[in-house]
Length: 249
Length: 253
Image (cartoon, rainbow over all chains, first blue to last red; front, side):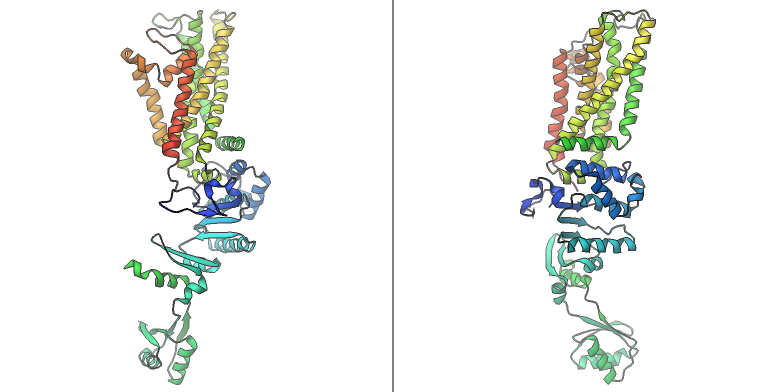
């Protein structure tokens, strides 16, 4: 997509042109591909200076970005001494040098601590809200779910599904997890109401075909004791497995 | 292209490698110049006497003592991008990869030029007082001195090209540095030492460099100085073109 790897077939265009045809590509597309792309003896500030020079960006821009990603204090230290999270932040600063409208980020959360991940989520959200296109590839599905507007699922190199999270989850039936010491009786009562019930633990049932309120109502009318009742979050992970399970067999 | 070259200079000067290699080159040149001067006039030294232009040229030609280090600088300048994966942001900023190689050729030729000037000054600092102490007059030899040192500076600049070209072709840093040193210090001396191979040997980089410096050596038939310079430059450019054609366009992951 960025002209680094020759495709077996097909083309990718950004704003209608192939990446290699862009005159100042980093003005239009910023990319973070692997966080290890640094000379260990070069400082963070010098790293940005090198890539500012290639495209003629002012050094001031690098300072603003160092501040934004929180590396100003360590900017003169060699990158070799940076933590994985600091490298990730520096790579992000490098991608933003040209103030691009499109960002391509491969696993941007790798190596970030929980605070860093929250910071990254906020940053990506605000970049997207500015009207930018932010393309994130990740295998941390719960992380993606919290930031993404649209999701493309690729499994073994093939496109599986594409759409908003709501659209994708629509294909997966919501389930309810219920725990009860009288799981046996509850299962029978639920099945009588047309729900499909699976035994998922000694006193736990997974129910589909009824929502949490429905399951609770059945328990109440049958006078059965409940220890837990929760709608299973219809998260991306389940969508992913529901959509790709066939390929794994 | 100007910006690309500027960026390459920033890459070069934001690590310390250039400084260590420069100190190494200057040290080697000082050592070689000292040896050439110290052993000049010994009965079993085949070099011409110091008070002849050829003898003076032999001493001054130690200016090229740092060629291997300049070539190593060029090789590392190219291959460190692959080693440290900075080739990714570099090619993202400049997707037309041949331009990156071209900028490096310009940059490392210029760096070689600077190394050459430093080495030439080193030779002068060592040789001038030593020759004066030996009562060898330099009056009237100004042309030889300036000509030989200028030729040496040119040779070092061209070795910068050679290094980048070789690094572009062999992108593995360790393989490229080792391969280069083995060639310069093992393969090449063997090939040039065998008289029967002289028709080939005279076209090797080392012999071409000697030709540029107009060094005389008994039993060896060097190219003319301009021929030598052209042959040497072609090595750098042909390696770079082969590198762009076969190695540099390979996928970067």
